[in-house]
Amino acid sequence: MAGDNVKHLSDKDFEETVNSATPCLVDFWAPWCGPCKAIGPMVDELANEYVGKLVVAKMNVDDNPSTPGKFGIRAIPTMILFKGGKVVDQVTGAVGKTQLVAMLGKVL
Amino acid sequence: MSDYQLIIVGGGPAGLTAGLYAARARLKTVLLEKGVPGGQVLNTDWIDNYPGFPEGVSGFELIDRMTAQAKRFDLEIRSGAEVSSMDLAGPVKSITLADGNVLTARAVVLATGARPNKLNVPGERELAGRGVSYCATCDGPFFRDQEIAVVGGGNTAIQEAVYLTRFASKVTVIHRRGELRATRVVQEQAFANRKIEFVLNSRVTAIEGDTGVERLRLRDNDGRESTLAVQGIFILIGIIPNNEVLPAEQLEMAEGFIRTDQEMRTNLAGVMGAGDICHKEVRQVINGAGEGAVAAMSAEHYLAGL
Image 1 (spheres, rainbow over the protein chains, first blue to last red):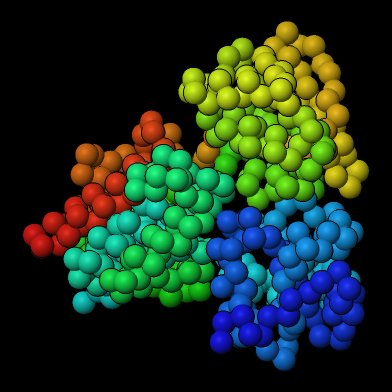
Image 2 (tube, rainbow over the protein chains, first blue to last red):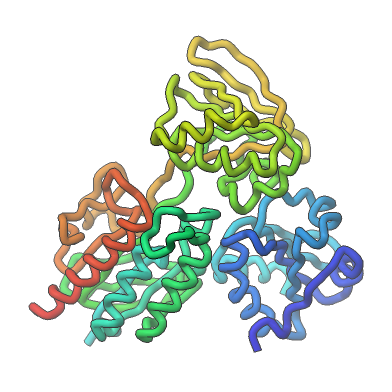
């Protein structure tokens, strides 16, 4: 089902998830952000397609203020790609799937 | 044989409405969208002047409803389908996608839209997403109790300046002219708002800061320089056309936008334009959608005559 393979992160379990061996894509979003909601289904799709190879996660910036602050995020949607806890790449705005898949190529 | 009767390029209000009309007229149609359906209207928090929504509607909900309506008539929408080139001159139009696939049809509606213009000053690109923003709805809440600037004097800039006062402690509107371009009712709201200050006859020459925006460098029209300490800057200075994939050598354009007649026909037989990519004065959701409807009906008429 849509979204079943997406992990919903909080400030508490963020570190543990991005530090794991599997690369991780985090979508920082909020319910008041139209472009965030528009790309939501596309992020769900990626999660389904990359199951086992990539952790696809979402973080609600309203409920979890500390992590976005740490990464200097002042615009959403922002997507950050992590490998072994390190930021590999990041992109802001309602980007297309093609661009995201190209970005994932850096870790997969 | 071509793959489709009609290809629509772009999934904003114009493209989605063209898709609704074409699918309902049972034309074999595909809508190509490089990202996800929506376009610039997603950047709008609340739309008060789209008829049929007496309480107003959010940009996201309006698009969600338009998409659902087009899908009810089985419109094929391909999200993430980026066009790399087009050949629109002959009777069969071909559109090449970034993934190498080629789609053909005898009619095309171009609804590629526009995107926010940039200031093109030092620091803008470096600090994008770190205090430099083009979308008040998306990023406004990050500036709670902070001081920010809005650049621009049009309807979008002034309306969003008012919106941003919900979060920011102070909003400074910077405009290069002595008067705002926004309509009277929008201006009055801004003038009545005590959190908004105006710096007119001035432009931003640089955006500075270490890990985020810290200050702006300004120059007024007499050449005097000053700095303004802000944590955010919202750049709302109009739009530029998404025309990079349009065949400039085939299509008649004006100032980068497509020239169309009243029936939304371009200079090329079977090729229509709709929405913000068209050369026109008024760019609202309502006329973008209206143009999409007209373009689809022109396409239907053209195909029937073949």
